[in-house]
Amino acid sequence: MFDAVIDLAVIGSSLLDLIQDGGGYVAASPPLRPEPVRGIRTLALEVLPDGSRLGELVKLVTSGDIPLRVADVYPFADAATAHERLAQGGVRGGVVIVP
Image 1 (cartoon, one colour):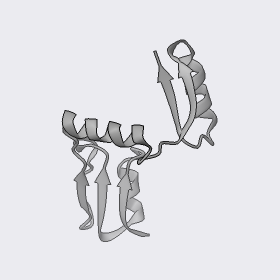
Image 2: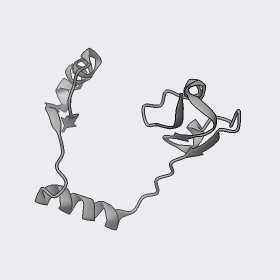
Image 3: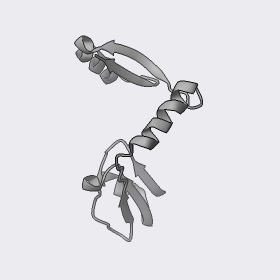
């Protein structure tokens, strides 16, 4: 049993069974937040657009201050191949599809 779970994989309310009574659950977005049970607090992340902060992140990535792990880059025409690669599992890093 866990004290809390952050559900970024969007598994859903079945994770509540793994949380101790009175624990916490965080969903990836407000519509995905399950109803509380057994005293478990349920919260949801809410991300609002902020162009200036996004620009700051781009600068940090470009400068190398925030390193990104990219497994593969695919052209848009090969998007199906990129999805097949993800479905195989074992991908370490992001799969990027570019125009």
